[in-house]
Image 1 (tube, protein in one colour):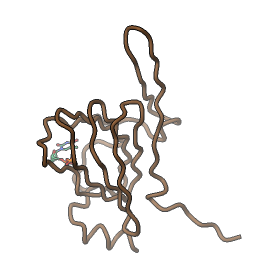
Image 2 (spheres, helix red, strand yellow; image 1 turned 135 degrees about the vertical axis):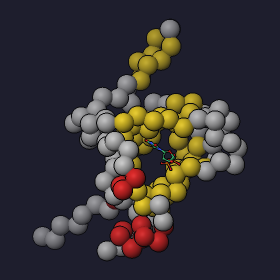
Image 3 (cartoon, helix red, strand yellow; image 1 turned 60 degrees about the vertical axis):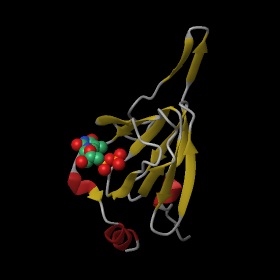
Image 4 (cartoon, helix red, strand yellow; image 1 turned 30 degrees about the horizontal axis):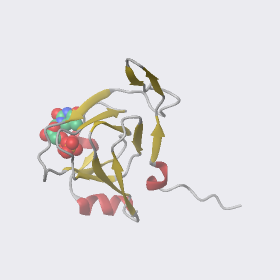
Amino acid sequence: MMQVEATPLEHCHMVDLPRIVDPRGSLSVVEGGERLGFDIKRVYYLYDVPAEGERGAHGHRALQQLFIPLLGGFDITLDDGHRSKRIRLDNPARALYVAPMIWRELANFDRDAVCLVLASMHYDERDYFRDYGSFLREARK
Ligand code: TYD
């Protein structure tokens, strides 16, 4: 039987994080490793994004990431060179796993939004596609 491989876009998925709620407040947790699908090598966060601010607009060759909207929300558009989809992230217990070879654009940030990103690799500019044309050429090979 012919094996049909999942596309990079199909590899992206929402991750429901555990929510430990008690009268003192809520706690959610992410553990790197098997459950997440990668070991966490780097953590960064986006904040103070102006109303019309746009982030991302690049792709990664190998990097895997988990986007967690800690406060407020924003839209993220995922594009694998064939199909794209836009998702609103605004629940701190609902994260988004972004697979390698995805062009992503983040926009429509709420005021004071904070986005935490867990990444599978240390920062390496060589892993980036900064140009959409070069990304498309690689993605459509
Ligand atoms: P970039 O990845 O383009 O940010 P975003 O995807 O959120 O729009 O990075 C913006 C700048 O920050 C760029 O000059 C590289 C630098 N940077 C680091 O030095 N280390 C990092 O881990 C990240 C994510 C970015």
